Amino acid sequence: MLSQCFLWLLIALTFNSSSPATADLQSRSKTAGAKAIACHFAYRSAPREGMIVKDVFLKENESAEVEQGDFVVTTKLVLSRFEASSLLIQLKLKNSAKISSQELYQFRSVSDLQNSFSGGHGFTGLNYRYSLHSEAELQYWCTAD
Image (tube, rainbow, N blue to C red; front, side, top):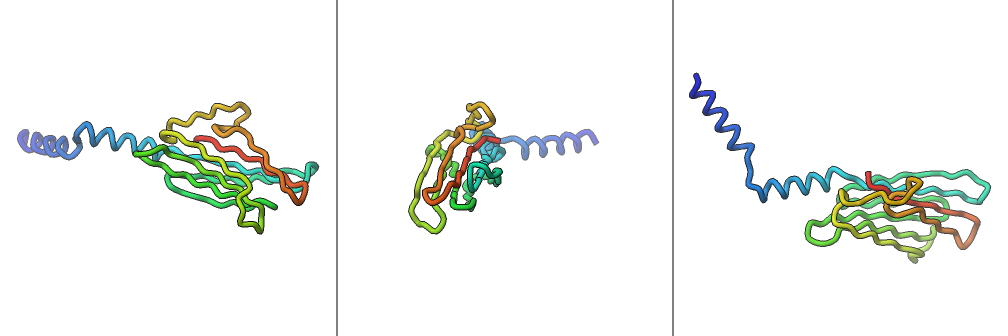
């Protein structure tokens, strides 16, 4: 009976152990995969109007497109173990193929990102964009969640 318990313990330890390199790789991928980036897009058609907010949550190698009034925003999160990871934000005016603004935020991993701006404006700070054809305004910021 004791030898059978010892055998099961030995089998369990064998399957649960891994080399330090494998353990390090697993912990890095779990850390990077456990975090996400949330981008918030607040739109109003005129200064006296209320804001309409849409949120996008991105995980590893995801992209999303948000249409808010006069604006179309594409966000893409690319995580890499070999190069700098990045968040790309591209803004276009509706019915136009031309990019009117683009921001690229580079970092080692999502877990390294720090929400350094006050007011809850994450690691990007609060950004404003205005329509050329109307009084419309788009505000956006991204946070590490």
